[in-house]
Image 1: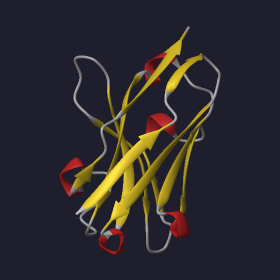
Image 2 (image 1 turned 90 degrees about the vertical axis):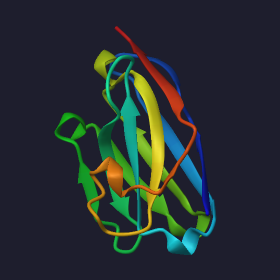
Image 3 (image 1 turned 120 degrees about the vertical axis):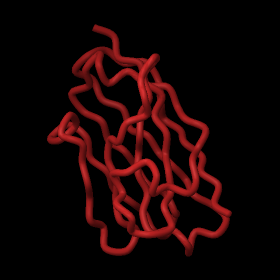
Image 4 (image 1 turned 180 degrees about the vertical axis):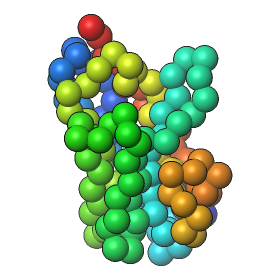
Length: 124
């Protein structure tokens, strides 16, 4: 089992920045990759960004390219989501997930474990 704890959400004005963290514990050696998804009110959970734990390959949704960056600290079993140039449409609950296999980190069905989510609100 893997436990994921997210932190770093909050309220920010449009154009601002936030950094989210997701710390993994438990059977972290089983992790192939980690990613972030988000869910706005009344919408389905959607892919944002992901990173392979093995080689650091990254995957981005088109809507966040050149604004969001993902990085990992393998020693700390932590992944970070740096969000710049935030827009009101980025408002959502952001969920961290961990996948045990390479079934496509952009697909929600690839993830085996989820954090509790952290709220990000961007005001206009």
